[in-house]
Amino acid sequence: MRLFQEVVVPPGIKFCYTCDTDEPHRPLTDNEKIWLKNQTGHKNVDGYFMCEAPKCQSAHRI
Image (cartoon, rainbow, N blue to C red; front, side):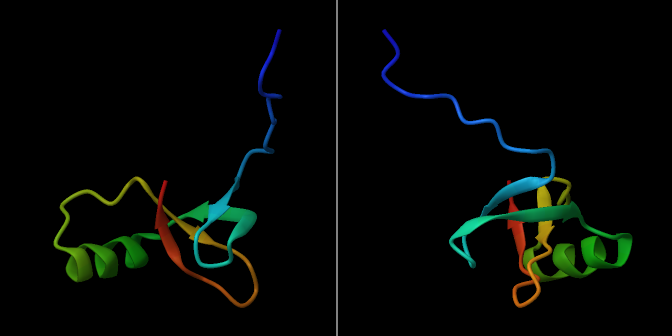
């Protein structure tokens, strides 16, 4: 007996904590990675993605 139903999320769709919904996300550009490294002090920001919702544009670690 299954207690939870498996939800299949399309590729590129991830939960955005700013929008509080599932939204399309894309990898950061090289310039965005440089900016984020300077802002966070992290050496590696490959785990971050940019929300593509029209009024969001927030970078999230996923």
